[in-house]
Picture 1 (cartoon, helix red, strand yellow):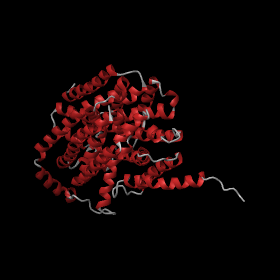
Picture 2: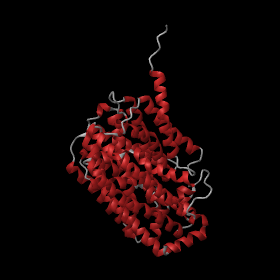
Picture 3: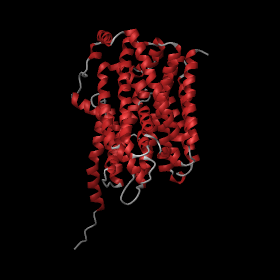
Picture 4: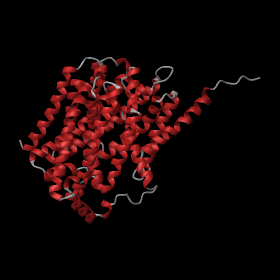
Length: 483
């Protein structure tokens, strides 16, 4: 067995051991399995949230996107950070406070709040949307892991996806969300170490940033153009679209549950500082690795493993191919473990949130059964694995589709309810459907490269609010008595 395999397996065993160790602190309740008993300290919640957010999307998708477009990918970081910061101030503290005050364990439960009690139809619709789109999102993470294993070891892509699913299920069964959060924290250090190793190796190969700039300019001047050319609606709408992309965190259940599980609202500020102190450097590192990978491997899309893939999917081989080209065996194992850490840190929480949607929202008769929750976890993992094995789209596309659908479908109505607006079930569902359908139409029209689809999607969700209220007035107004 080679040094690459040994190093990779060593770090995987560490993650599994951390997850299993968390079971010592678990209680046999669904509140503990799904929200870690709302006892997570700020630093741990922050590291978990940032590792969950910076998943296979960052390790595979963002590096691939940068390989494709060059330095202009920095605007995704700028927009994402600004939008995410707004969500931290406007949304996350209220999610923490209101979920505890109302004793709610899931995002659909928050969505269904009303002055007359819970709106059952809203709970079911929101739970179904989460089940579908987080299943796709989790599948993207498993697909990212399989891409790396295929590139580095020549394994069939199914092996990586199955291995990732098995490990995620193992430590989810051991400690639920607590195991997910603990392993996220451990994985975050491996993830940043892997990025640093790739940056050092890339600089030794391609030279200084100035050398890389000249390399990219010689390949294609568009790669060093800061402002993307040919934008139909101009640069400002393009940038605002990226900001809305980051603000989409307000509709991501697998991230919101981290704030629902934190010990108190007073610790949100500390968690925010830790989160961005990790998030911004990691995002910058992923862009830098993408640029160095383009300088070191300009013919990436023509290598044999890229046969049958489109350019975006082929460019998703950039990170593992760069590791294989530039790193010694033990660091290749570290980098691969970092990628697996990224994918598992997101997939585990998404699968757990899907499980809660099943047992808490869709089938509430099982809401107090830990066994039912674990069976739901196993079922959701199997569905995500099936999607990963048979989906034709790449990691970047799958993540952005799921992220946008959840952000546009859930965030507008959730935000209004968190701020005390009284929405009928009819209006809430109309807002969800308007957001998701607009995202789908925008994607279908091929406008996503001009303005990120979450901007029109979320605007449509908010615009559906007065429309829904007008419909409520027409339907619910008392009939006039004839003279």
